[in-house]
Image (tube, rainbow, N blue to C red; front, side):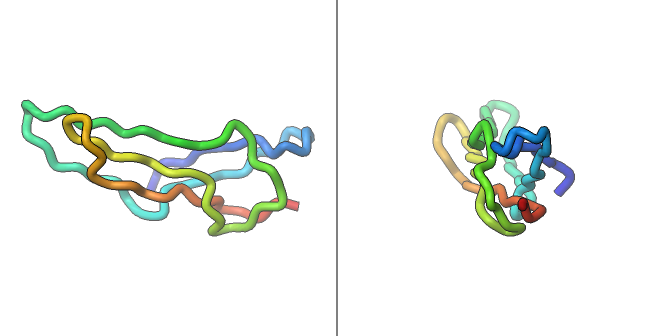
Length: 79
């Protein structure tokens, strides 16, 4: 997908766990439309987490209305 978010692991050791969209995010809009992407993620990852677990989501909005929701998932296991 190309977009990666790094969430600090709450353990305090400085490790960060990557999360990525489960699929690509695309919106087709006219020039007069307003498209927004809202990323919802926690500030920290509370372990253990496993690759594929849901970390958050991306809301896709067109003219203020949600038209898609894409899960963000962890890409690695934590200890």
